[in-house]
Image (cartoon, rainbow, N blue to C red; front, top):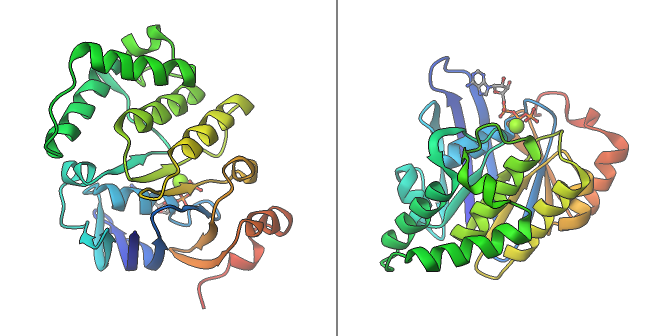
Amino acid sequence: MLEINNLHVRLAEEGTPILKGLNLTVPSGQVHAIMGPNGSGKSTLAYALAGRDDYEVTEGNVLWNRESVLEMEPDERAAKGIFLAFQYPLEVPGVTTMTFLRTAANALRKARGQSELTTPEFLRLVREDAARLGVSEEMLKRPLNVGFSGGEKKRMEILQMAVLRPTLCVLDETDSGLDIDAVRVVAEGVNKLRSDDRAILVITHYQRLLNYIVPDKVHVMADGVIRKSGGKDLALELEKSGYAEFRGKAA
Ligand SMILES: Nc1ncnc2c1ncn2[C@@H]1O[C@H](COP(=O)(O)OP(=O)(O)OP(=O)(O)O)[C@@H](O)[C@H]1O
Ligand SMILES: [Mg+2]
């Protein structure tokens, strides 16, 4: 279970507060969606969970399976099964996608006390998932995300999830540029990972994505806090009414 209590985050450099006492619980076995106006702090939440040092936590705590996440280094977080996919994935020139995936997978296995995968084992694992997700051999040989189109980056993100099998997945979706197939790829990738021991948080502007994923809960973030939570129908309501009622400052 992911538990976020009274989380306050500010920009380390400017000191500007972005998250202002955010509370959120995502039990294992569930998929939750966060929606909300541009600039409300959704990506900031993802960065704080990742442990990026340009986002400073000033108050509150984050527990993943009762362990405190904020004291952990980013690689420890990954070893605990935490996976974050960003709105703007990092490009890694000089490292092929295949090498990246293999290094990441083996680092995680090592942290969990498992033996490293042999080359044939790893290739089998990746090729199967890659084929299913429409990631070509040629893409696997290219440097990670360099020159990948928006949709290709999404496929790669889902491939990483499929290979690394994290237990907490936070996906920060782009608000544009996904074609219908890519929306399905993301949705299928997420649905395939649904399981009792896994919690998934999808940040999205797409009501349509939620038709495919069908979240257990939908939360609206505005001005750095969760302002409203509801079932999957909340996404449909928002589609109709927009975010007008959330534009003002928190009461
Ligand atoms: N590194 C940064 N430097 C300056 N301002 C920042 C930085 N990171 C976040 N912000 C500001 O913090 C606020 C929240 O940004 P954030 O990216 O979390 O919003 P968001 O909810 O993800 O928006 P969107 O729906 O557009 O993706 C915005 O006003 C943004 O300009
Ligand atoms: Mg964002």
